[in-house]
Length: 106
Length: 106
Length: 106
Length: 106
Image (cartoon, rainbow over all chains, first blue to last red; front, side, top):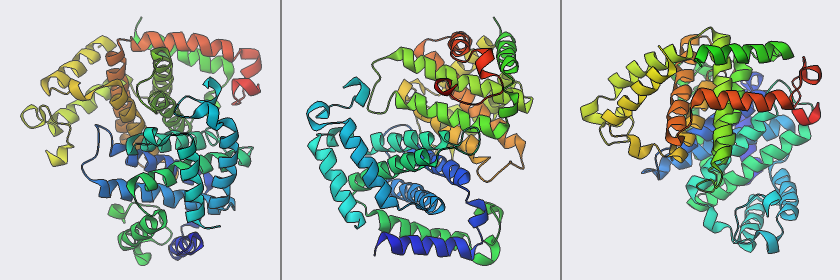
């Protein structure tokens, strides 16, 4: 199963329900924040006792990310890779190794 | 390029910098929320004038999602698909078509 | 200095800049999420080394909360108190003492 | 009713339940993000049909903000006012009037 297969399934799911009308980039961006917070809620007071919930909430964030990539006409893997190239340059191995500081504080 | 290739690149990027120590599930969940809000910021006062920023912020959310999937030992495509099956059942086509209401209000 | 004084100052600040046009409830709700994530970013990889930043980011969240209360015509203290009454009932002392579980799991 | 009265009520509520142990600054920062997203959820697909929910979700964000101010030993009104002074300087009336751009793009 490839990411294209999953994207195809998602498009079908949305189209059957006539939901594309709700999926503006802005609404999808809000949805990603909302689902990200539901994921965070699993860690609100410490480690979660149920990792099945963590997995399901992560799936929701990922789903909306794939839908937003689609709405923008972007390839999700391609944008991750090209951003990674930028991040590599901002965090050179010799400076960043073992440190969680921001690039402008390295 | 498959999602496994991108995951491999991300793992390499993290390992070269010795950053796995920072990537607890909780820290990654916080990071997803933080990046999701940076994405949302592009829409804070309306439609963004620069979609390149939207794409880059989405890439950041996706990157942390892939890292969290990895930390949890989950396959990102598999969890999206199995959550989709649950959502299909919660939002049957005949009830959900053309409506943005939550499943408990359909 | 009372909360009404601060609200008056905020209104003046907004009005001098002719910013009320941007302060729809929805835009303010997005702004609260965005600022909340900037606050969270101070804790992204653990305890912050600079609590002055935490204080400033908290001030930003509070500011947008006061602006939203204003846009809704609500008294911020009154709504906190009436929600507290609801929460008291959901989390009775004898059940909730020393536990971080959600009310439906107590 | 002053903000100090509300803060006193909140402290009593927390202390009766022995919840101060959960209220580390980090947990409160997470809680603010979580509640901010529940507020945002009211606007996920457009204007909410129920403003009572908006009010209640805003109350939750405010409550955690007051608890975090307490945990930090900060006066919530004081920090809003001193941040406002900084923002005034960043957004001078003549430059910022009628514009939603960030200060570095004015």
